[in-house]
Length: 213
Image 1 (cartoon, rainbow, N blue to C red):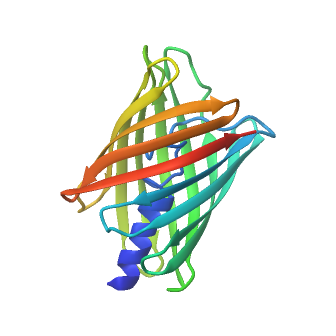
Image 2: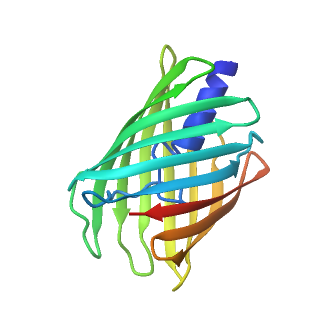
């Protein structure tokens, strides 16, 4: 049970609802970075498990429709380190005033526990007045274990110099996390962000930075 708990927890924290969303969202969008561009993101989080987590990810656009990413998460409570690699694909063009589709597939490894898992996620982004709406539906599977469905929904709000969002996400047989977040670009290509929410009757939060290139 400890092995399963650690890996599922790492999947939800490092991979969000089975994909690395752009900070501070956990629910992912259906777009990819421009070819040769991308982002580095790093953040500290306290999920419902009360673990102290530090996560860093790198995503780079390699084709018009494909972004490749790597990530590492350190739990200072276990202690445990997890790493992951993933491919994110834009399946249909982004449409102003409409919706587009995307998908993510990835592989995660817990080093101390020597456990592995595969995850996949279907993505929908609808560009609405005032800010986009994102929908996720996916699954993660522990090697030698069962498959658990994941889901998420988020709405962004453009408030001028600040962008806000509300979101809900979770996994099969688990209670959802409800979350509110803010982000702001403090200088060109450098963003500061944070989230505050509730899961399993406990407060959860994160604070982070995002650097685009």
